[in-house]
Length: 459
Image 1: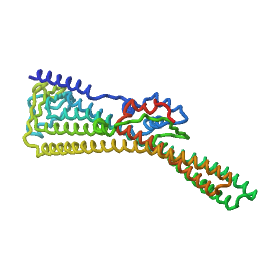
Image 2: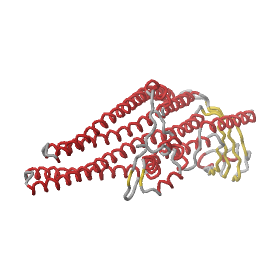
Image 3: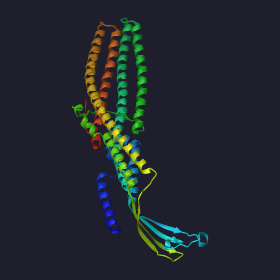
C-alpha cells in the first residue's frame, strides 16, 4: 500500500511540475523581469546613456532602470517565487536527527519499553506527508499564481509609469516652448523699441509711446523669469521621476500614427487590458484559497519512521515505521471560519473585477475622446496662429506708413504671442493624449514600447 501511495505521490509531483512549468514563467534576475515587463532591454539603456538629448522613449527607459518604482513591485515576484520553493518542500520528506534523555526510573516510577528510540540516545526521524488537507497544494498553486500576478502588476505599473513620465515630459516641453516663444516676442519688442526711439528723436512719435513699449518689455521680462522658474521645476520633477542626474535636454519630434474606431471596439480593448487581467488573477487566487480552506475537512495521512543510532538501553527494536491517519472531528469552528473568510475574499475579488472592467472602459472612451478633441483643437489653433501672424504683419506694415498707432502694434504682438503659445500647447497636449490612448488600449506593452522609438520624425 505504501509503495502504491509513493507512486501516486510521484505522479502527482510530475503532473504539478509540468503544469506549473507551462503556467508560470521563471525569471532569475531583476533585469530579466524588468525586460519582460517594460520591454526596455539593456541595449536600449546603453544607447540612451550615450545621448545628450532625450526623447520620451529615452526618458521612460531611464525611469525603468534608474528608479525603484518597478523594482519594488518586482520584489513581490521573487518573494512569491521563494514561497513556491517553500511550498514544494512541504511535499518532500521531513528528516531530522533527534536526541532524547529519559528521566531515571526513580523519578518517573516506570521504565521505557518498545522502540529503543524512546530511551536515552540519538535517532533519525523521518515523516512523509501523503495528504494533509489541501494545504500543500493550495500553498504551491497559490505561490505560482502570486508569481504570475506580480508579473502582471509589473506590466500594469510600467504602463502607469509611462503615463506619468509622459505627463512630466510634455509638461516640461510646454514650459520650454513657452519660454522660447516669449524670448522671440521679446526680441520683436526690442526691435520695435529701437524703431520707436528713432521716431521719438525725429519728433514723429510721442515719448509716451516709448514708455508704453518699455512697460510691455518689463512685463514680458518678468513673465520670462517666471516661466524659467516653472521650467526648472518641471525639469526637476521629470528628473526625479526618471532618475536623471546632471543637465539634460529633451526633444520630441515624433508623431505616432492616428488611431481610429477605438470607441466602437472599446469593450474588446477593455477585455485585453492588463489591469483587467490582474483583477481576473486576483479572482483565481481567491478561488484557490477557498478550495484550500475547504480541504480542512479532509483527513491527514502520513508515513513516519525512526532509526536508533545510539541508545543507552538495548531493549526494544532499533527502528520503527508506520502509517498514520488523523480525521478532523472538532476544530472549534476554525475551518468554517476560514471558509467563510475565503468566500468573502472571493466575493470581494468578483466585485473588484466588475469595477476594474467598468473603469477600464471609461478610461478608453475618455482617452479616445480627448485625443480626437485635441486633434480638432490643433486645427483651430493653427488657423488662429496664421490669422495672428497675418494681422501682425499687416499692422506692422501700416505702422511704417503711420496708418496705425503703437498701441495697435502692441496689441497685435500680444495676440501673436498668445496664439503661438496656444498652438504649441495644443500640439503637446495632443501628443500626450495619444500616449494616454495607447496606454489605455495596451498598445505599448512589452516589446511594443519600441513603437515610441522606431517611428518616423514628424513636423
